[in-house]
Length: 506
Image 1: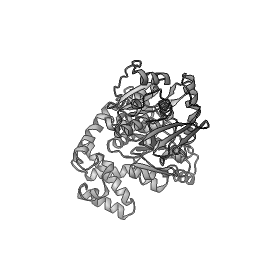
Image 2 (image 1 turned 180 degrees about the horizontal axis):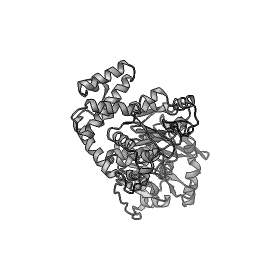
Image 3 (image 1 turned 120 degrees about the vertical axis):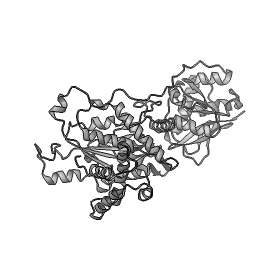
Image 4 (image 1 turned 90 degrees about the vertical axis):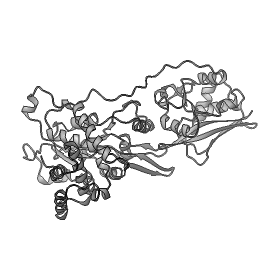
């Protein structure tokens, strides 16, 4: 038989499409034609597949070979099609039964000696295959841990093309080492007990973790801004299995498992350098569109240190995902939407020299330099920040204390209890965090007490806050009410939320 077909998967963002790999071998001048909108990496598959087959003692057809990847209109990128093409080629030559490979999806890059190399996007690819009715997949051994998260599929993890061919021809394969899929709940290396003093910043971090509110930490170098930001995931509730799989799928597209385990239930934290570009922040790419930092921090924390030093437009590119919870990237090959529900944590020095503390001690900056420095954070972005917290230098008394501060476990218990109250309140409404309350509901069902609303309307009338700021304050007030055990926000809760939003010391 000179015609054979099998299956692989093409990814466009997180959306996967099952691709039929068809191979036709006909008489004629020896030529290899690849159809189906391949990119450069996929077009180079001919040499990888040929060398791998020859080095595995298989015959390369010295005839006219046509490889078609259907649907033809769908752009295809990457090297994960190598294995599927090689298997279809051998089946077209009659060395593999065609019915044996028709209901299997093959994913993997071939090295020149036939070894299977890992590829990115295994989990979203297998999810797409399963939705299409395919329940058996052959993947590289290096991707076995990630692929094994698809418990409803039979995963055949192989390290070499020879082993794949032996299994297809005889049904024999080596017994793979069983992988322990215990979900990892926390990271014991970081704890809020390490933070000396900073009661106000610790409270703000607890409020942010409880309600999903964005936070700006302003203070001199060495005050503990980075320590606090890095420990916010340790006080957030662990991810559900569905959320963990979604986070794992995004990190799989970016090949980001060198920093995060596929089975981690801890909220991710991503800390891009302040010199990062807009594409690295929101995602993009010319051929394969990859997720950016805002998507890699989905269901977690996006921490940007030295925020005023970011290039122009980088932070403002986060304004749309902050509101929508998703980021849509438009390129010539199509539009891709990635999830981007993250908690934004910004850290900034109070001035260029970093020594301005409100009292001006040791600061060499002029008032104009201070205003210009913090003015790099645009007004529209700052209007989306719920909590603005001054972080003063740690004093001698706090550093001299031998007893540690409150641990992450204690804070997390309060956060979980307060979130449970919010979830019961929002049951059936489609959201569970106070930061997600719609503006209409804030003016109707979820209004604070009358005195609190009068206070906010006065502030709005004086143009001390915007309409968005009013909504942000009410959402933070609901979080404070949940932490304080109030059934609805009181005037004290609203005034405290207003003070934190304005960066006033409490």
